[in-house]
Length: 91
Image (cartoon, rainbow, N blue to C red; front, top):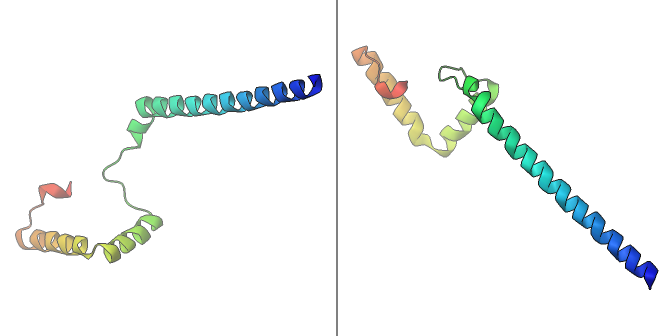
């Protein structure tokens, strides 16, 4: 009886420890991302960055799923060629 109580208490301690450890890891991850958002992520934004190889693949997939986006881009390109002016939405 005492052995069963000791095993049961130990099991609850292990489960509680695991739950507390998971909560602590999630809290630390949250704080790390909050710190990155305040300090590091601002330097990552670059509106003029060119896409890599994966961006081309995803762009082709998006054109397949949403063909109207290709037509909008073609219309913008045609307007640029006709007027020689840039569209404010291209920035």
